Length: 298
Image 1 (tube, rainbow, N blue to C red):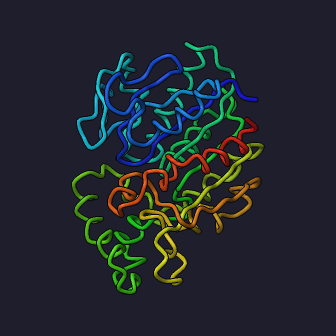
Image 2: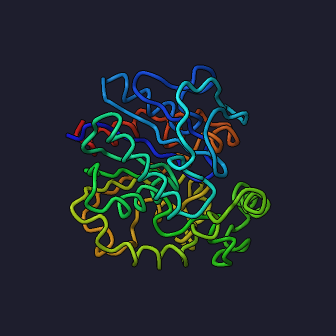
């Protein structure tokens, strides 16, 4: 069993550095992505850390946004903090730096990574960046990760369009908000979550996940149509097929276990928008946590 679990949030997330003994003192302790999952691990005595992330380069001291946090007791340097709207490989380099820092400061020799959304891509880039140096990554669990494209990336790339929404109001609303959001926030991330980009990036990742047990968990609450499978069903940002890594070749993903949560959404943002309980989001549901625990042998 690995020495610790490290939680990695995704695109446009703001997450403080947390350790078992400290977190943000006000608001959501580990941000609006990882707070519930972190608490689940802590309740069972698991040594769990969250990787710091923010929108743009810099340090994480607070999040003044929706369901944010403040009073972060330990603020790490910018070079080990993920820019959650930047390029995947740059985020991976920062995450690798954070993992090396954990190894040096906390005496951690090996870790399990749990990545939400683009956090799964950041984790894969970090594993490549670490190579044979420590700490060793034993297992990777991804929650709603765009292994093979995303709603946002494929829309911006022109691979899907309004006709593919088949008149579904929720999907059309997501489409309408995607482009202005990407224009306002992306510093490279939006261009790197399309199917076209990720298929080439995946090919370049061949061999990186050898000897690492991977569990890919997808969701598909929005299911008004069945075609194209590149879109339907989806969790608001990622199709069920992409989240499960169904079409990722074995040379890239040699050992994988796949799970589906068809009645779940990508995050609590979508749960809130749809009038659902937060537990219908992938990082807030104890049923999902049980699958993660099993994947990590805990």
